[in-house]
Length: 235
Image 1 (tube, rainbow, N blue to C red):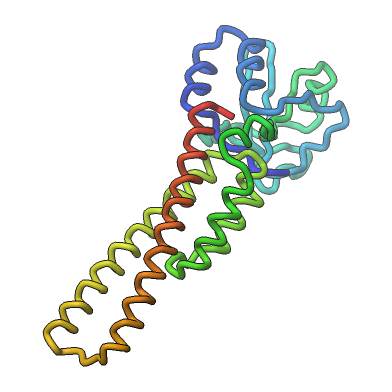
Image 2 (cartoon, rainbow, N blue to C red; image 1 turned 180 degrees about the vertical axis):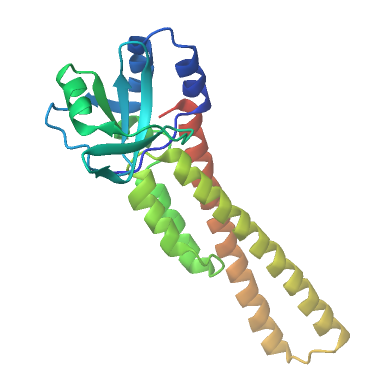
């Protein structure tokens, strides 16, 4: 079971304002894949989110670990994680027979619509640029985000991770710029002795890396802006 992200602020407000369980269900279907569970559903998976419709109220719940113990299903409310009283699995299965229990899962993205904004190739180009510039230590993390969160449509989670990595990258760029400036001062003052050929080779290496860093920064910004657009559009 893939982890499910909490509702967006807009959806949370709409759920709070909904006048009926049917309206809440309609709102939930806009952001998640929502399916009624079978009458023999085991309710044994931990960290699973359900929408349960009762006679007087409806609840979003998330099962704990263990989810099922001694015939009782253990859960908290979701997404606020407020403790709730365990329920007999038989009662939940009876509700499922009435089609009053729904399983929430991440909605897979519309790949065609998503790819108009940003596709897997943008991540691949960034990964290549990151490896070439030598200033981004988390290349493996970018691969994981591409093949995990992004592919599964968890764009908000992917954006948060990529923004954090970009911030670290910008700090590293600033530190490198300061280091190169100090090196130039040391060379000009004579504190560091270099032959003309050595100086030429050093500056050629520095220029080559700077160009690689600029490409990586451009591709990093492209991915982050693309993810931000997907989140804003609710794709």
